[in-house]
Image 1 (spheres, rainbow, N blue to C red):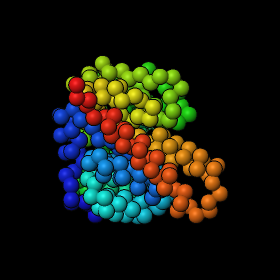
Image 2: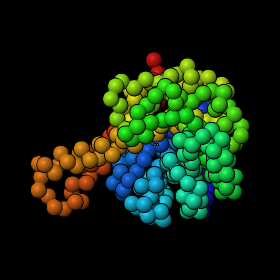
Image 3: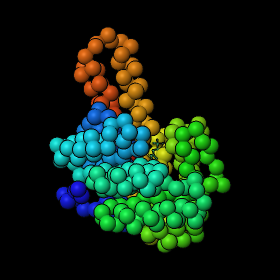
Length: 281
Ligand code: 13P
């Protein structure tokens, strides 16, 4: 079932890239984090991408995750797309497309260039039949527990070739960001990003936005990034708030405790949405 209410994500992202704007792509894990994200998108009057990883799909169950996301988007009247984040197999991508996802990421970035091309091209062929957006990753964006290295940054000429050979809509680029918390001040290679943007037709995605200051995110958006992925700060905010509330409170009615965490997520996402808006001087 494809959602017919809004424009395809690939078209929306292209429009945003031309306008030098971006969508926040937020990972959700349960009803409460989803509710917090949508409260923020609604109050800011913004569209949002709702992302699910394999882990979250396994936790919620694929049909529940999808139906929950669609029902909540409808309830809030927010324009939004459901996206598979870091899909690691053709089978998972196919299951998500069958369930009606608007967009899928196939992440074969740890494979060789030619393997990454082969796997991504196969996913693009499949996703076209559903009219879905496809994101892939080229280069090395450190995952949780991995070390970041400039050696793994995306090469602009390779990016051009990769996009031409795969026909992928969106490309996640390695320019200095990493998943999880940063141990040192995050830096982005904006010059490299600008060159990748000149070389490729695909829209560009920034992973690992947790902990990146707003001015750096805005610089990235000015140079081709139009999808900003946020996960760790959502999880962290939810759990920290829950921990704090439980320490001062022996309440056993979870319905009186979870809203603190939901509201904290809403506040965080609201601030991020404001952060990625170009500041008018
Ligand atoms: P963070 O967890 O660092 O926010 O990164 C999110 C992400 O890139 C999901 O794909």
